[in-house]
Image (tube, rainbow over all chains, first blue to last red; front, side, top):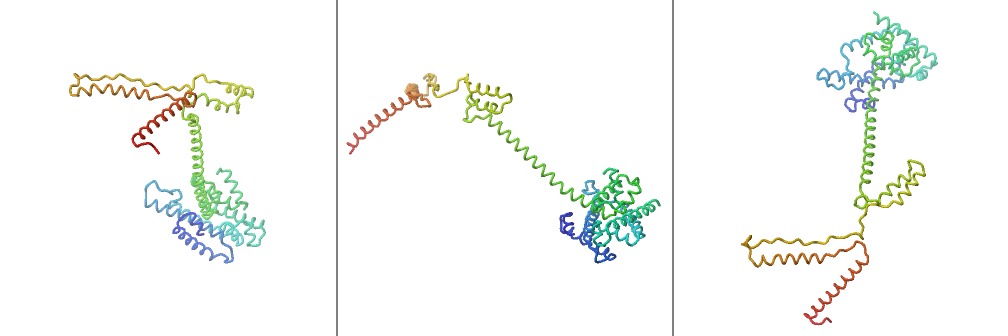
Length: 153
Length: 239
């Protein structure tokens, strides 16, 4: 995790801060999953995501403190409206995932959050690969229908 | 990414046939499409974008940033290599042109160096082999029409004595009369002596040079004998 952050920032200070933040996010997530599960892939994804979020935040702060147009990274900085919309979307998604069957929800999270491949899910759960694929596909289609209805409202 | 590609990836994603790499690409493409289209993004795409979530998008952005950073030094490395090759080529070309213009012995380009230059065209003929052989034979039988300086034709100009215009006593009354009278005579005598001392020597040894050397040797010998005789007269006979 530290190596990923160091590759991105190049300085120990920022990298360590981001790793600390990533560890907190993982801790919160691990409270609600099986402790036996391998979360290496999730740790990598969370660290990468935290790196990008950290940069976004710093870019936003730089934009607010320095209103000059020569700001180096304005592309990644979202507006407050974007942040509110993202939070709203996350709530909608969490509600939709909560309505899935437990097995479908577990497989969907393994694939979507932890970033595991179908083979890795098969190895961890012991379910046949076609069944895993079918259940994940069903979960995604259910979520698509649910989200489309929520987006229309 | 084109719309058709995005749509095909969406279909593969919903059928759970997409790989994690394809899902990252899809997340990035949908992010770009949402930025450009805004509210006009199709519902399916908006829903898939939500399902992919921030984690996939963050990972895709991270990979994109890192790959762009790694491509940049590679680009500059290629630019440096290209500049080096260009400079080296230019240097070689300039060196070749300079060496062709500069003669080997420090004199101007003569007819003697031309056959070697033309023999390159004989070894790599542009026209047929018969033509090139004719060129070679022509080059070998070539005789310079312009005379080339050589040791036999070398002549040194004999120094001529210019008549000196001396001021008369009336023009310069401050000078003593004796000096004015002696100076032109002395100068003329010295100039004549220098002119007599100058002998023309050919650059390569031939009959004239051998005769000259022998005469010089005889002269040196006679001088030596005279000096020895004078020394013997002053100091007594040599033991």
